[in-house]
Length: 319
Image 1 (tube, rainbow, N blue to C red):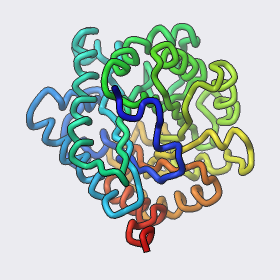
Image 2 (cartoon, rainbow, N blue to C red):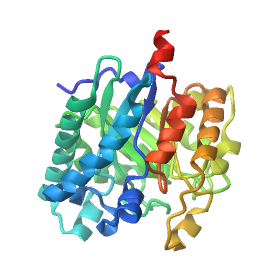
Image 3 (tube, rainbow, N blue to C red):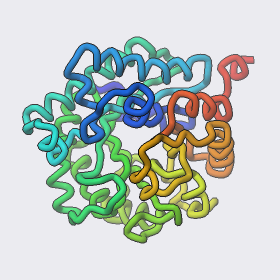
């Protein structure tokens, strides 16, 4: 029985950390080739698995000594049918990689977790297409498309599935319905452009309220990822009911637009201290935001700065 599937601790008021931008860190800092931005392929070799262990352990170490839990996100953001075909995986091979991803995280959890530090395992889901562009599926098509990956993850020890970098409300609805069918808790994370809106022009409020309305409020919570806080701060409204549904942020390091990042051949690491200060302001203004990590361009330095700014130390808590 999955440890937290029926009682997610990240919704109980404690701060939780996640990792940073896995793919950008591995590619630009470590020089690892990730075809089509897919990190799950590293599970295929002992060297790749060692690289992944070192990557995750660095973030888990940051959380030690803090009053924080941790959400271990799988490396399966690209492990769906379309990207799998590009990478040479059939349905059986993809299912195997999704299962191996969760088993890999189970081993890491057994190393790190303590009673005061709950560690949640999340199966990561990405959009069918490009994370910066709107997909063309309607909600029924999205439900059918994503059901295979979600059902596979539901058969593992994953506590929930987390859909990141979504730009299309219909795709988000389909994922939520597929998760509901599989009796799997889910998290929906939207990304926005520099104007704080989805690439389709819809507002975050509209996106969240529409998904909730059309799925009976099935998502356990929402997040924002793959955008800098300067892109979405103006879209957030203190005191609004929909804001209570946003439980976390995984922001980009760079203030550049998605179009600019797509065209860049170098990684923009931004300013970790400035990013941490922005997270602190967000968590003070919106207390429901208690799951904190990074996305493109961020690494352990950014998450360490965010942790230092936003998460109390265990010694201070016990004093």
